[in-house]
Image (cartoon, rainbow, N blue to C red; front, side, top):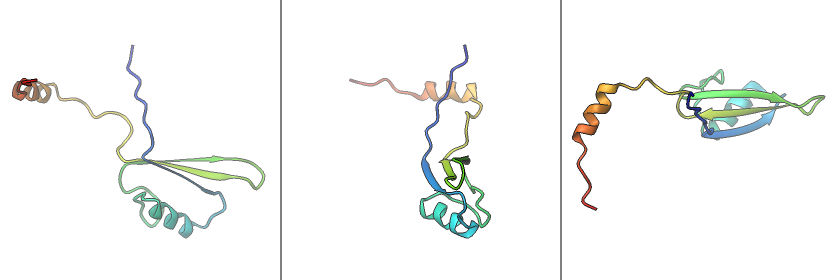
Length: 90
């Protein structure tokens, strides 16, 4: 069975759907999400979901400081790390 990885967003922000692009970028930056002038994340992963209907639509931005998923594990590096571990005295 494959291990499931659950990720919690580093920052979650909800903004009105009809906000201007410049106000959206300013709000994302004020919340601490690193975005460029177009609103694209410059690091990590930014997920946007639109919810609501009939004038009550909102965009929920979830920013993950690191990318989703795991980087491949280098087994030789892991073995080298274990070789350098020292036993605890306690």
